[in-house]
Amino acid sequence: MRIIALVVAILTTVVFIGSTIATPPGKNVEYAGGGAGKVIFDGKVHADKGIRCIDCHPKIFTMKKEAKMTMADHNANKFCFACHDGKRAFSAANNCAKCHKK
Image 1 (tube, rainbow, N blue to C red):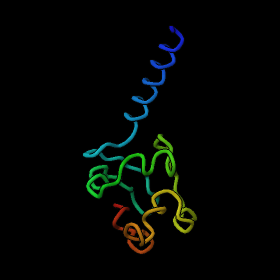
Image 2 (cartoon, rainbow, N blue to C red):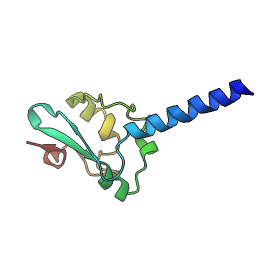
Image 3 (tube, rainbow, N blue to C red):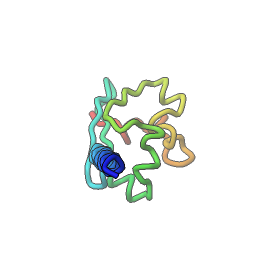
């Protein structure tokens, strides 16, 4: 019984730590955007559109702020571009200034 209680306690801790890393509604995360300018991810904007954390994490993004996106990722519909392809959400292809801020 003690082993089961210990396993449950560890799993609960892992779940809560994972949820604190994600960007909740009302919070922003900034990514260096290279020469195009920084990218600001706004948790509230996405939540207001009905997007839940689990829609992107961990399927599209890991739970760490480590995304280093390239133009090849833009073109291959990876990361943000999995949704921002002009079908599910605005196309990032011709709207650089919507995400990149100088």
